[in-house]
Length: 319
Image (tube, rainbow, N blue to C red; front, side):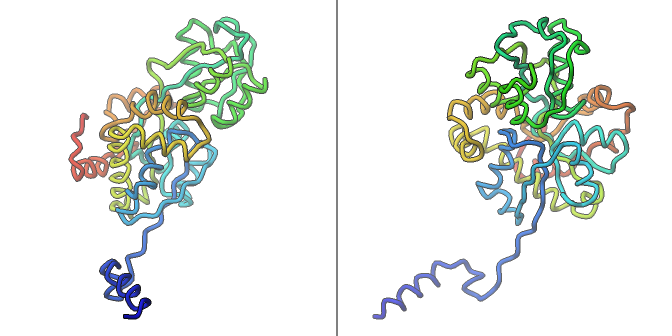
């Protein structure tokens, strides 16, 4: 029998049904995320991509890193469907931008206050330079909380906006700034280089990564939003149940050692929400901390699709 014919017959038998029938597969719907920094907090989205959770929902995702202050503009203009820069976007919502919080990865990110090796106590930081991502951003607010918890007035430091976590890491390492607030894995990397851990993690803190979407997109594409949130919830479940596989994903995402990736998992990823939700009282408290004025909660958040996705996956809401 002809070998080529046998090979062709094997391919035909192994092909998915649409190909056998000559039918085109359904095209994937493209959705774009903007994210604040290249860090391990991206794990749920990375897992949802690498394990095919997005694709199983008929989605093809594009991830674009962007300055947190530009994320709200990108969402409102339609350049992106989803964003995760919590403080900048949440503050934009409180100022009237038509965006909704639809999912919460972490209710409190594990920040640490790291200083140059010669500083052993926060009281030595008077007049020194604090490096932050953006003025009044998440790490800036948490840095102030950590300083206050140690009895130091945050007004005693000079604040410089230097950029994302990797840039703050380099700024501290090179001596451009004297102290930063940073999350995992950068805290461990700095510890290993001899830098001083002066405080952390905070008692209150601020949410880590969340998911925001424009009100218009939410109104016009509710099923797409539901599919995205369902894929992310599946990623949360996977992360909780698969420590080593999650660490391997982090190693492919960022140049880091298994020890550093494991540190991120233990301090950051294990603090993720089970259901992607926050309570109204938690959101009220955040509005007080971040906003010049409060807005009705229905204008700030819409967790209905996260709850629907949770029901489909059998996730019990703790709200």
